[in-house]
Structure formats: C-alpha cells, structure tokens
Length: 561
Image 1 (spheres, rainbow, N blue to C red):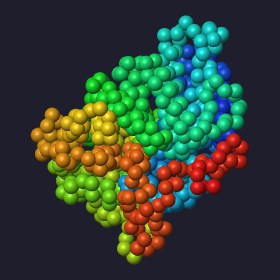
Image 2 (cartoon, one colour):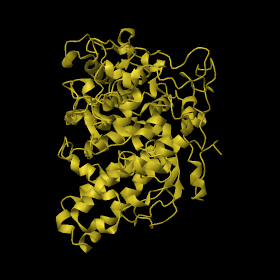
Image 3 (cartoon, helix red, strand yellow):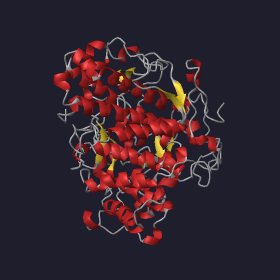
Image 4 (tube, helix red, strand yellow):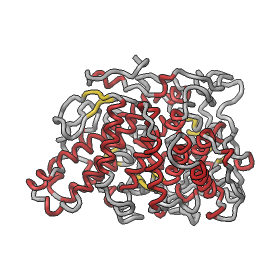
C-alpha cells in the first residue's frame, strides 16, 4: 500500500460485507442489505472510525467486493453507479466538454442530446448514491452521541476525537445535500434527529440550500485546522471551499446574492497557504498526487484496495483507449476503454498550436499551456462525421490524457502499468478557489479588479510554467481581457473533466440558451449535430420515477410530470 494513512479510508471495506442491517434510514433506497451497519460495529473505538470511513468510502467505492461486484445499490449497475462516475455523466456528458460514445442502453444519448426524462437510467445513479451517503452519515451521528458512547464504555477513549468525527460526518452529509440542491433542486430530507424508518418528506430547493449553509457554518470551527487531519479526511479548508462553492451558486439556486461570502471563503483558502498551487498543473492528476499539496479534499484511490470502475479508474480509462499506450505511458498499459471523447468546443478554448499531440513530446513540455492535454493521432477533432448519425466510433473526437496513472518522475507504478488507478480523486483543489474568488469579485464582491486579475494570472502562470513557476512564455491577460466570459472559458481550461462544468454553465446562464455545442438539442441523426437552445427545465434533473412508487410524499420537478 503506497500510503500508511490509506488504511483509515479503506478500512470501510472490512466493515462492509456480511453485516445485518440496523440502518433503516431512507428505507426507500434500493440498498444492498449486506452493506448496512450492525450494532456490533459500535463496540470499539476502531468500529466508530470504520463507520466514519464508510461515510467517506461511499463516495469512491461502489460495491462490497472488487472489482464491481456485490454493489452497494441493489439492482443498479455496479460500475455505472459509482458516485464520481455517475457525477461525471451528469456534469460533463451534458456539456460542451465530453461526448460519451457508449452506454446508450443506460440513457447516455439522453445526456448527449440534453433530452432526458424521469425514467432515464443513467440519471438515477447520483441521486441514489448521494442519499446512500446521507444515510451512512445519519447512522453514524445517531450512534455517536455522548450518551451512547458512555453507555458503551467508549467515551474516554473517544472524547478527544468524537467532536471532529461528528463534524466530518455532518460535512459529508452537507456536501451530499449541496449536490442534491445542484442536480435535482428539491428532494426528500432526513437527518439523525428523525425517527428511524421514517418515509421522508420533501424539502424545497431553498430549504435544502439553507440547511447546507447552516450545517457548514456550524461545523467549520469544529473540524480540524487546515492540514491537521489524517490524509483523505476533511478539515476547515474543505468547509471554506464548499461554502464558497455554495454561496457562488446561491443566485442561481435560490435567488440570493451571496458573492461577497463566496469571495471571502475563497480568499481564506488562498491566504491560508496550507494548500498552495502545485508547481506544475500536471502533478495534480498523477499516481503520486498524494504529495500534491493543492488538493484540499482527495478521495483516496489505490490500485490494490479500491478496485472498481468509478473514481479515477473511470476518469483514465474512459478518456483514453488501448492503442494510445503505444505512444505514451498511460499508467494502465493498453487497458483503456476510450468511450468518452472531448468536444470541439473544449479543444478550441486552447491555442491552435497547443491542441495536437506530438509523439516526441508526450507530456506536452513544448506546449505553451500545459493544460491542453489531448491525444489526436488517428482521431478526428469533431465527434461527428458528416452525413452520418451519431456513432459509437471512439476515434471521433480527441482523447483527453490529462489523467495519467504514472508518477511525476514519469514512471509506471509497475511494468506495463497497473490494472487499476492509484490517482487520488481531487474533490476540491485550490486552483478552483482562485477562480471562484475572481468570479465573485466580477459579480460584485468587495475585492478589486486588480485582485481578480492577479488570481486569474496566477492560474495562468502555473499553466504556462511562467512567472514564479518557470521560464515559459507568459500566458497572462490584461484588465481589458478580464470578463466573466473569459473566466468561464478559463474554468474549462483549468477544470475540464473534473465534474463542475454543468454547474458552471448554468451559473453563467449558458446551459440551456445563448451558447450551444455539438449535439445539444439534437436527435443524433445525420447532419444534425449542430447545437441549439433547449427548454429551461433541463437546468435540473427530475427525481427518478422509481422514487414515486415507494415515497408518496414527493412531487416531481416542474415540467417533468
């Protein structure tokens, strides 16, 4: 195992299998009965640590045994339903960044054409994953009261840690509800204070937003100081980051102008310096990115202990294919799937000279912008072919080689690469805080334009390895170039394939109308690939239709009835 502290996060695997259920929270979910928590787990301090680890692990693992077997969510595809993979589908494959060439039986074409409905299968996975994680966190908090610890004789052994443990569980739950707010708007709500087995009532989007904000504001001082927690677990900086993200989207979600708060919390991260920008952009997405201090909250991955088709294993394999290993070190050999390709709109956000792959410069060292990591040999730039309908042709569209299961000294973890990824998934990272701060200023927060320009140029210096990061050609912009549209494009350059794009486009009011991309609003027929405006109802995903057969308290999102 490459990290000693990985044991904490992965210990949830030891707790997952073969346990009978005392967890009836959100019992409308299609949960695998094996993976629910037994009271015997709470007999030791280590058991509490393990249940907390399960709260974390629910966001990166997808089954009771690897690879992709005995899934957490009974009756749903184990590989597709891993949380980070499910989120990628909704946040990337509905946008100007990624075209998914496979999975049509799961509903991937609905995402590509932006024409989904309450029965679209691929849309359900994030919903059920998020509520499963909520259920774990509720269960932990219900069993982690001082009274229960004293009753079990564990208070003395846990009294120095339990407040932080509870804060972490509340943070993970708040994160999950923030994503429900983002993706689905409203949804059922339950916390640890409600009776076990209760069929939950639905909360409005505004009520869920208010709950998320109140929880995060409450726990931000209870979490450990920035950098003081075990690797892979959240601290105060993570709460600042999530608050910044939620406040930045408050106008879109609930009609509240909270840009000043978004700015202040983003600035907290930048000023604190515990999580500085990596010296090279490419270091964030490699197999030894546990040494990358920019990542505020990583979901820990390991080629031996988190073997599944979600996480960065999906991120790498979906975006590349096997024959590319003849040209550069993928870190997984020829094991890529190649079913996801980037769209022309993303590629064209980079300078033309940076867009193509050079077989003599496989790391892009000679490129100006090191973020332009595409494989182009044998590929068309477009994801479409004139005169033909949309095809499962993995050579239609450039591949993204941003994610590599190799170390920063450019070596494989094993000869020929490993079967599964050891790249930790960067849930939150500091570069995003720089861009959130700049955006908040331009939207009216208290900072100056000069400050916003400095934040953007710091990101671009790092991308170009210029200024404080090296002697590369400068990519800096001037004040006249600094606009909200530029920041939206810069977020694409910096954060593509990191599952924030849909949220960004909606916040900039360019998701349904006013900006179009390949296949948007199409039906996939020949010569019908040019994007067009769509109904505003698609700014939200509908609550899965299956929910209405088990929870009579729900009302569907507008216009999806």
